[in-house]
Image (cartoon, rainbow over all chains, first blue to last red; front, side):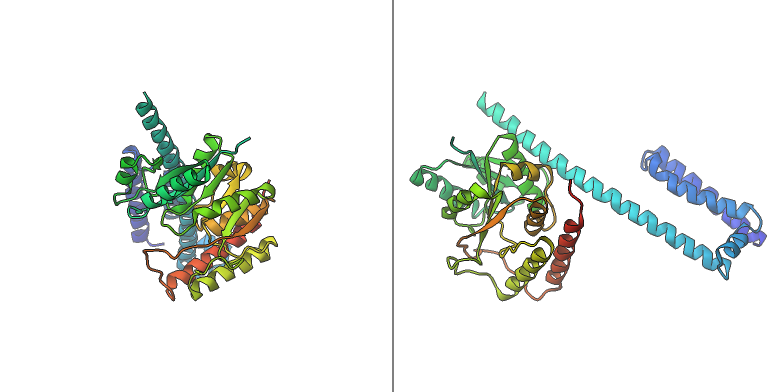
Length: 117
Length: 236
């Protein structure tokens, strides 16, 4: 990799880390879900810092060009993140439904008790 | 012992029908000395349904947010379970269902866990829905037969009665998507007995049906997929 590219990757990684940490600090993402992003940025930094790391990995995995491998890996990573998000959303939908039902039943009970008094 | 019977009426924007439906049950109770309790589940209606329910002192639960038919009906089952009802009857608030057939549904619960009010058995119902809808119902029916071995003719009927066993099961888990066919499959897969009872249904007074739309094909694909998934699920 050229020096230019390494510098770019480093800057990108550092900026992303700062952004994600600041979001976590403000409590907008829980630490658990921020880890997957931090981990992927960490890999980008690693790739930038270790000379020939990406090329070696591409050779090892059997990709003809390094860029092909990067696209392929990123794509896979994003698909996994999307699937896990769908799982999280589905679970939350269930929990919200349960909450609405229980609160509504409780509300009816409280209203009835108040009227009965 | 007299059985405690609850009629669950899910209602979403039913301001024009709900009072009529409730009155028909009260009148029926008086005339036949039956003792059907009613609970209307107001599924976050955005019209005057809530006001009408409160003004006429109709027993109801206001869901604090719209959940859709499955979530609303399940709330009714939860209420039935908590209040120790022996039988729960699902009944539409829009005048589609006929109160006189509830006793038929209940009497078939003697040797079944669930009784489904069906338009397609017997010759009672003149209203049998549109051709396209019937085709859809038949396809669903075919898949239920394929995966459970049991032929259910009116798979989308929302007129059904359940005993205490299924009240408990449904209060804990009830499908929120395509609840009618899917709950049937789940009940069959967990070895509950289901029968169909011939009933008469009226045509919906309001509301349009969109035939030929892509939405229906999407619906069918979804229902069939859900049937397959639910059938393949492992039950304890």
